[in-house]
Amino acid sequence: MVKLKVEKGEYIFKLENILKQKNISINKLMRETNTDFKVIKRLMLGDIVRFDIFVIARLCDYLECTIADIIEYMPNKNE
Image 1 (cartoon, rainbow, N blue to C red):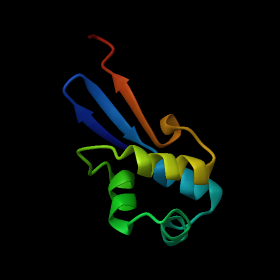
Image 2: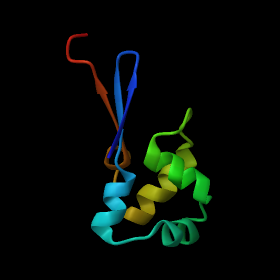
Image 3: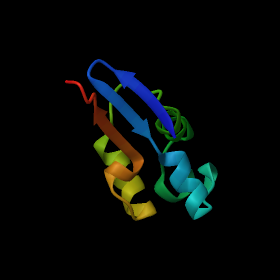
């Protein structure tokens, strides 16, 4: 799980946890979802600027999960 702080909260990237739980390698996910390796790594590391809804949908379909299982946004509690 990787946390990325932003102005009014933080994003939590949980793709790596899901892959470990389901025993799926990055290479297998890449092949099965036709998703570029770099895109998957960026989603795992929180090294992204924009979310591609089509990529997220493919990953959710394949992993049988929701967007919140992959990326979660938590606003600051004091805001």
